[in-house]
Length: 218
Image (cartoon, rainbow, N blue to C red; front, side, top):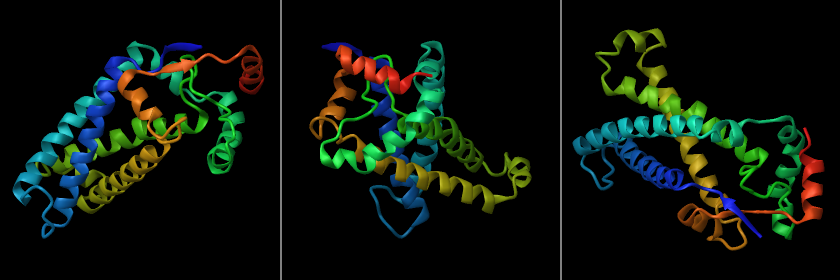
């Protein structure tokens, strides 16, 4: 039986818009790092597009944060609880081995428990650590003269550049893993379709519900 919608419309729109922003930032970022490499933009245009896209991404993050707090989804879906810590090994075992042998996901997505323990850790890290980090360092880079004192305080341009670049590589790794994990539905396109249509959390049968309750009991 299908449950409630997993992904509300505002979140789906934000998801695809934010994905486009990240891809555009990566393309222009590569162009800035390798001036001799021609990727869609000339160098001057790449600088402008990268800067503008970075500010749009900052607005995107603020929207996500406000929306998640107001709707209660940040507290409901993202907070790591004791049951998540207990279930962490089982979820890791599933992704590492069981999924390739037709095993069952110990934490299937539902309207009440949308993310499994590993997803919570990944999403919290990306959204509350690395997104603010890359946004703030990008803003500092946008006008190094205006923010000279702040840049000097954190160790200078080399430190700023290193932090920004490390965060960018983490985003690249996350994007690759995220795309791979999106193929782990009943069919390779199921999770992608969910982010278009909204999807539905499956309501477990009574036996499955009791089993899940025993695993997830705090």
